[in-house]
Image 1 (cartoon, rainbow, N blue to C red):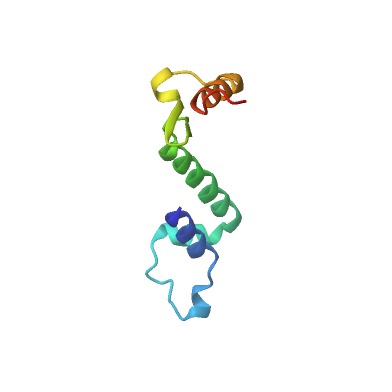
Image 2: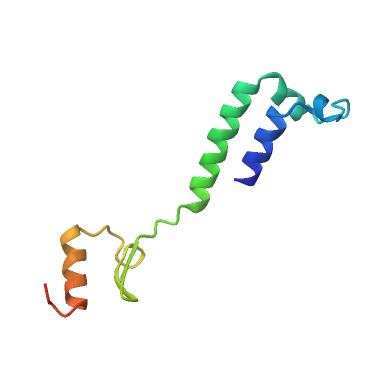
Length: 96
């Protein structure tokens, strides 16, 4: 996420107005500045793909009162709403 923001800033900021010379800028920075719209779209798409894949563990956990009601990692399936409600009801003592 930080890299996405930094690349977007490098693409959008006007370095000349900040008094920074682009004479020794890396080729990537110069290319990003030439095609700002495409560069920003690329930064957004690629950055979100990396972020989503890094954060995807496949885990889906349901807890109630500190107890595990359901764990996708353990069961390898997704629960139905009824199964979750029955488990929570059982943990509550069947009061509903």
